[in-house]
Image (cartoon, rainbow, N blue to C red; front, side, top):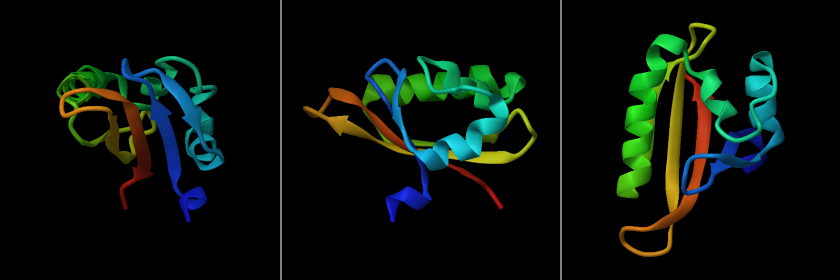
Length: 102
């Protein structure tokens, strides 16, 4: 059932390194967001700094990502993700589910 959800993976620094077709479908209006940190361009520019602060905190603290924000198309979007833990305080990246709020 995972093929029905927009999923992507980021490495320990937050760079995208895997995504599925549903993620591409959801983000296609933003152009190519499948390299490095380009995926962050999905988030509305005025919300980006706040989003990145929270996202960076999740990366640094190896904790679940659960961030609601606004897309560049003024839609409510939600990032939900879990770290690939290699120890209590270290991870090798995150698997993130991106979806639009209703």
